[in-house]
Length: 137
Length: 496
Image (tube, rainbow over all chains, first blue to last red; front, side, top):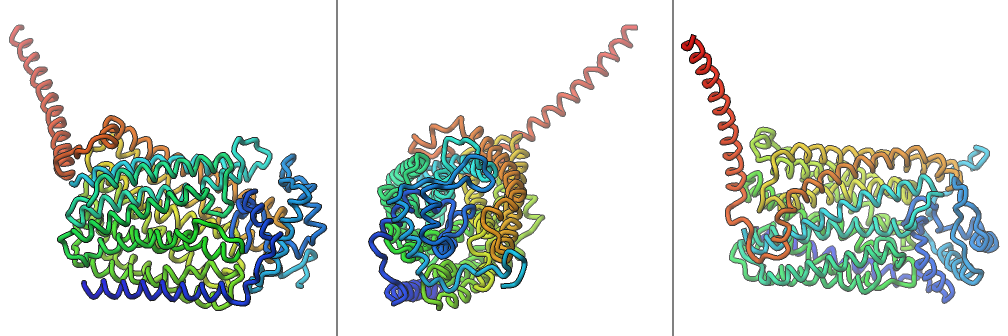
């Protein structure tokens, strides 16, 4: 089985090398814009508040709170600010509200969501096929 | 039996303990989703982080124990440092306890699956380094052929754990880079590193339990791990589809994810070829339960991880199912279904290698295995249905996530029922294990000597003979009783 071992090690190293190269290529490609300072601050807040446990970004995270990748495009700056500073009662709950943020924190977070919105995600998430009245878009 | 093997049993013990906690926490989380107003002392976010980290750490702990156990056996050698096995154990168990404790208190790094604070991540990295160093030094010393497939796959798996963990000790300011790094652990650990280790462990176990021929298994193991090394690493691309990287990742992911089915096919082929009911019935009770747990793992490997994963990784399907409860269903099948069951099997084998399980408890073990399977099935299928409907309501009709969640509630209720059945199974199994291990608990943590000097098969043989003797004695008693009665009747008659 000496041959088997050689083939295994060779395949392992080749796939590790090509994978690393693909990642290097992607992270240095022009598609990756640098993140603005305020947005980076918002990202840290997003992590500190553990938003990812209920929400998804790029579809990864908790499945109960909905995806935030393109939420900036749907609600806009003013809508998001209202939602975050005066959170409504969650749907299906009687008292429980969304976490409340201060105005500055909300602005940082909105900058982060705006940055995420600007990322080209290969047209994900898909737009719903029908609108509210049941007509095809 | 080597001292290294004796020292690794405590890994199995703590793995069982952590596994028991998992179900209880999960029921809490499932209930919190159904009843958002429920007053719980731990926030949903902390609970979920706890659940996710535990789901990585307990199979990891059990698997590392299994590596120490089977590597020493396969290399026919004591580990180069037995002390390091103990050091590694306490470091890892300490790290796990602190990580889980701080997560419950709400200290989080806020990256899904990698929520632990950085000092604990460094400690985890050191644990895997200790494992690798000890393995490498033992591998150098061994006199068996260096190309033995079981040794190679355990070694390669353990070494690769550390390669992919290091980039994740820090987090990155760019969300896309963060995601790229995250899946080096979330994907590659599960679908390559642990997979390599478990292939080695499983092969070693099957050689011991079913007496499979090493020559026959060797070729299959090499074929398997070569495809895992290729497809396991490259198929990480199926997590990169929508995170803001160039579109060529869709091709890479689609192609190599399809290739991931090949090891599954090899697994199916080997299972069909080696599975033999007749041989199964001849096994000792303990080995039957071990094999039943392995069988469950193989089942979920084929259907939950293999085929479901295959369809989900196809980019046009993934576009719709990504980020829904379908992913969650897949994660449960692939993480607990494949690794959970396998680690339970291996740990069960390790725990009852030095001591004998009480005979009355075997039936409870069977019930527990049944409940775990039924619970996981109910959970997985209701999550699949919930995910399918979520896709439809959310991605096709365009309802809001709030409205969608209201419509999904019945399925999440079924999921909770599944979780309860599962937890009853896990509690039963853990109870049986701890009840049997309890009298000798001290020896696992203190003694530097092996508990049982005789081989486990002899141990089980003696138990069988004893049972036989007791049975014979009962028969003899009955016979004596009968003779006594006849004698009494005779004496009565003669008295008349």
